[in-house]
Image (cartoon, rainbow, N blue to C red; front, side):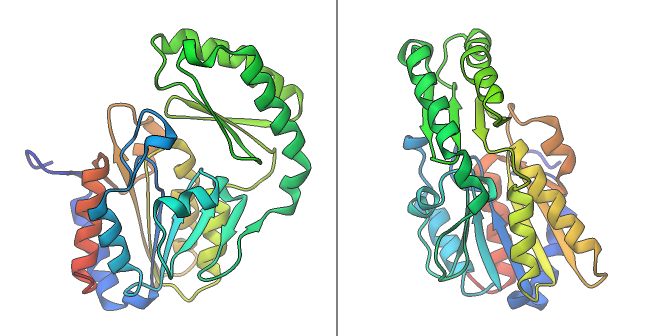
Length: 280
């Protein structure tokens, strides 16, 4: 790594992908997480923002590439509110909600049967946890409940309380639980992930190159799905880019072809892509 560089590793892979995208921009797909990737990590989900420079850069990429899709754990409409771009596709709640380019919002029908259990878990969490004192933020996304504890003064103790009062009861209700950056997510026990969603998006188009960008464990499924898609056709080129900080889980780093320094590094990488395809 060069001193002071925002590209931590994989600079050559990034450059090779940019050259491939330059040859066929309309056959290139960009699949991008939001929080921690194009939006700096914030104390609470409500405080997160996509910087104006990022919005402008991504807006310039939309008409130049064959597909720009935002793939988030947020509710789809919430993610779309953060970065509302005409011509982009959206995936919400880790693949349970999708919106194709200029299409309607579609919720996975199987998820509906778990809405009541998720709601009951959210109500119990609000009742049994002193969220304000613990530094816990509950984010009810209807089909998914996110429990954030980034603000906790004692993260280890708070984590134990969440395991006891949220995770264990959720599992007894037949729900699945995933972990992230100072967060747990309670969700339906269904085989839908960011990976399954992006695979459907890629299979629906004639893409020959795909770049996926993320920062957390749920993004590993996206990295893996894009890589598997690429391996099915020798003409295809893929790139997985991870925004890393001191909190980044090891599996995220190991699954990436390129690692960059948090959101400023993602901006630098996407700027290089934009330059290559003539978007800036």
